[in-house]
Length: 298
Image 1 (tube, one colour):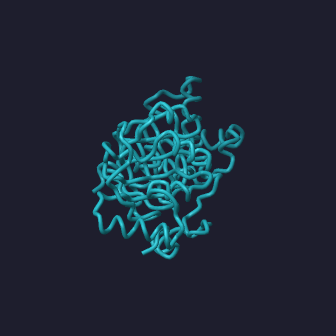
Image 2 (image 1 turned 60 degrees about the horizontal axis):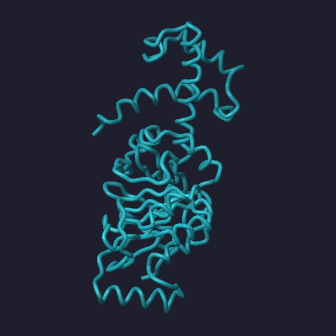
């Protein structure tokens, strides 16, 4: 086996047809990541659910610093409980054959580049399950990482909380160091609670939880959210003006309202929504109706 194996990554992420990093990991564009900052988790969830991706969300986190949105490209790592023969074999292989230094947890960190989020499955281990402390968290930030999603623990919580440009989702904290674990894969499928993350997924973390967005659906999530936000801008304006009441706005719009909206769009579309194709607005309205019912789809 190889850690961070390009052939495996290409095979696992074949749905992505865009740019890739040297190791084969999908590289969703920086413009999409910027737009994703303004997407509500529920809006992205509706797109994923509608496309059959029903196991991409996980809640029940501790977060530092509080109140910040996390967006970035996933770099995954999977740790398992230590078994001596497996542990010794993989540690020796990584150090001697691939030139990796230090313990397993630093191997994943050393692969990070700007815009990455480190996503680690360490089977919800807290005692001796502290994947990072203050030093390694600062290393992630120095490499341009935007955050970390850790299905395990951390230590040095205050030091990590003080890193303003690094958002950390974690399960608990403990003063013990990491121990009795073995790394079995870098940039492989990764289970985070009841969700699955793949290398190159766009990670969106908010106060609602974490969602892992397949790279080939990331732009659709942005467009769907932006269309909805644009219609809501019109909706709120007309309600404040007393043109329509809340019942009219919350129900399926009449043809009169749709015609008013089309006229409004020609002269009132805010700059951040100018890229949206006018003819797609009706699809946004139809999509919104179906996404509201998505939770009942089997």
